[in-house]
Length: 340
Ligand code: DAH
Image 1: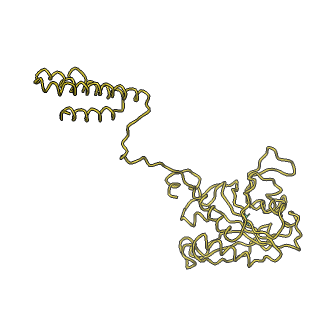
Image 2: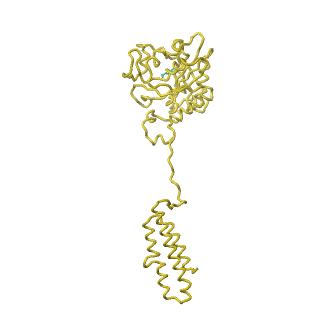
Image 3: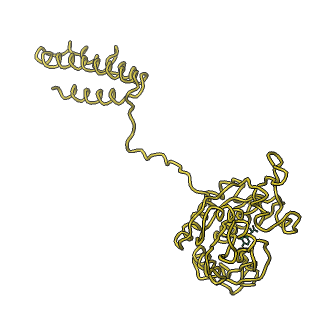
């Protein structure tokens, strides 16, 4: 085949098959087959050629015109159907933004993993709308008891029975009762869950936050089990060996009641700005389950003993990631959230 025709053919075929809309295809038709088109011009110039040349070039140019006409028709049909689209396979792809877990979810998962590895069962969080009975009475906090004032409560008026009002649970401790009503000792459980307090917010208080309730009950569970569990747990969350310190405190559902400190997660006990130079951080309320709580759940308090504690998830996350204000977890600022 004539070299010039061959080159023209290659170029035209490439452009026609690569066209991606009808407008550019129409332009190509004009470019090659229009009155002044490149193929048309070859056909016109045949008149100037010798007989021999005409015999060679003529049929080739005719065949090319026919071929290109067919190709343009075919491509036109394809584009009308929009079945094919040309695209540049070498272009870098668009980065797909994937979601990720909220820092509190991450920390809660980690807490769960640690307790699971210590053979604790993870119990479903239970109802966030709770009754006065489970949130207070069954936990040895009778009506008019001053301890109720420690819990600023969101009371719910609708659907509240006179003697058993509804509320947003102020702690995860009601799940101690709910679990014990249905299970017999020995057991060791944790209950992670959301809780609510009707109080003013500041850098360390939110109206809703998360706790992990821990409860171990058996025939001879002691404070030593509590101390060991707390030390193991906090050492593993903060990935350094931390000792615990038990101080007497008061919670109606435990006797003795304790406040537990751990060595400062930053300085390890030497004293720094985080622990206000004391070397210790207060992390959880705890104690040995009160006999009245066992009675509420239908257990014989002479037969069983247990320890309980309730840890704040936000507090752990704040210490772990050096977050200065609890409200950052909830204000939806992506500059914060996207760091996790
Ligand atoms: N429920 C308590 C609170 O929210 C925390 C707590 C204290 C839980 C002592 C316990 C406990 O299980 O034994 O303030």
